[in-house]
Length: 384
Image (cartoon, rainbow, N blue to C red; front, side):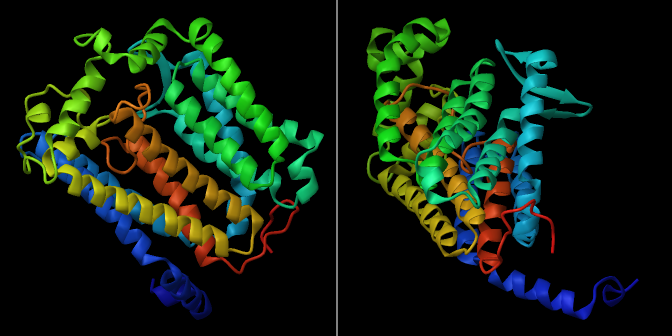
């Protein structure tokens, strides 16, 4: 059967127009970041495509095609699926509590036949879509200060508590911060924002001392004084700082990083891949990658700002906030400016789940640009 028999000429023309509307400079920046990650994974494996670089390249190729396909989907479809995706993520998080796999003392995974799934990653997108839909059509006054705000607070708080109980403090912080960012962008009153900041600041000491697990509390205390246990809990941060500092301006050279190549640096392909980059390519290499991250964030926010739909604006901005938080938290963690909480550097670190989550999110960002003149009804989001 020919393409003309499957697709009417007008539909083909619309697809071509949509394809041309995609921001290909944005896509190129994502490819360069992923390429840098693949390059580093090749290096720290001793110049081998296995076990990390080849699988990352294959995953990125799949995710890139998926992102382009998602960019072509009408915003009304995204709108209609928002609550179902949020609800699915919540159900899967509850399922983790009941039948989830336990690995390394944490219960974070579901085994669904041949597929091993981490529902907290789905929840990152679910919270963004759910909040964007909730605030779509809400008046500015209600979004600023009203009893209705208890609903989005619960939409963020419930998954945060479930994820923190797994325990996965890093992901819980990401979900909470992303949800908070969307509420602020939606117009939350500065009185509430100020009160929340003071409340969180006051709650941190008792939370650290009485709520966190022993190993989590040790991470926080080690962050404050890593030299107190250099061969134990402080080892990760100290080795990361050594790798960062030893790279100098231009680095030691590709494949010549002693901290990573000799396995002094832990989790060198995931949480601490940025330290590996610093050791081999120095300040110039790190600055170049950070420039790419900044360019992706800037272009994503610009795409969010030009769309006519409030739902798309908040959704695209929420995805961008998630991506920015990955970069900020991991960067601070690697430099010893934040506790080690297991947050990877998105698109750079090895790991398919985070990459899939972010590329689905970037599909929404691109859809906001491609369909920037589309209007989404404040009703049930049915296709017109």
